[in-house]
Image (tube, rainbow, N blue to C red; front, top):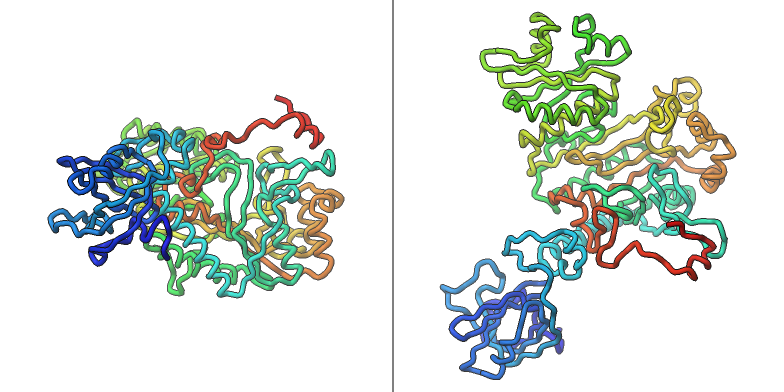
Length: 598
């Protein structure tokens, strides 16, 4: 379509357009002077086209072109010329042509940018400066391509669910406080002094109410808000998830919807090969306790094997006090064999020990298996040669390996050796970027001891989940032995999604919350809408909510989730470009009936 600003974009002209009169508009990307002739690389979203200003042909336009500087916005009219074959630029889609410019109009000038936009130049720019001038940073083709890819990725997800007869429904942004586990963002109400809305951590209750309302299949690309500290896979404040819910479904039927989608997203939006599909093209299902015991994590990176092995029975009568005392205190002893780990330096072993200690471990014992089966370890003298040989045989260690040991409470041993396993994967370059290892973690415990109040029973995961066995299980089993229909989807060591079959029965819900210390009145106060709705014929239902930003980050091997966003916050949760958060004036505070305490 013809426009007064352009007949073509800067990424579409080629030899077939030779001789045509064209109009282009864009930014001055790069300037070169050769023998009096000025060459300008003109850039827009679609590519780069070379412009040629020859003083012998039109010295007036050449004089104007001589003023041009980086990031000025211009419009040109000219003729497409085919370059000599020895001057083709294979790096550009338009590398076979250039434009002999007959008209030049400067649409806007630019200050000197605070950093280079030219991605061929390797100068590293301070990230905070890039975030402060994000509108300039967005001109880089790599960022634009990523945002375009994200658009296609979200469109694919939408099309997938529409094909399966799901209905996309927008749930409220001004909502109520939710027990999702993170801090809420609160919004004071002007109309109701002293009361607050909460931005939704997730549309959890709303999507369940949609199922009670008979919508049957719901999904949404849902904005979610959590006041959590940022990290490389968690954007501060806001993120998007694929929220979905279905009625009259089992856990396995949820997996049957999600597995094909994640397979297609991997194939279409990454260069990775899925490594752990079974013969029916389903992802591995791994019970939570097994995952914790074998991999030391409920989000294990399965691109590499390196399993942890329980050896409690083997060493329970040994003379090594560290092992014996842990077992005596109802703890466990686990061993992690690391192939080719014998080459770790003393410094690296000390680093791994600190990683274990950060997970509450008291230390990290080890045995190095050197060549000719020579052993090196300060604990062999306590274990004795015979038991040491049995341990080496049990974990199938050979020359060149190192064995690390954890001895403590089960959860501490799992977490500490899991962290060591993960770091060993980094040190030995085992995290193959060409692989995508998907896995469902299932059979989460319904309850665990509270980390805030020792000895108190609390929900381990989602409080709205259905306990396996229903009310009978809640009444007869010890809380720590109750499993829930809860599941997480894991990709390459990252939690990609969490979900559950929901508790849709008011009697079971009251009992579940009572075990966690919530009385009936409190449950009614906090979740009254849900409880009330369940009394009017709630269907069995379940779903999950993949974090689409995090999944794309992993599929694209990005260093930070911030790269997924057009306008991200920095590592401290600030928007450096908009200077947010910012103070508000006294009039606004007064209207909201609140005071600000600095």
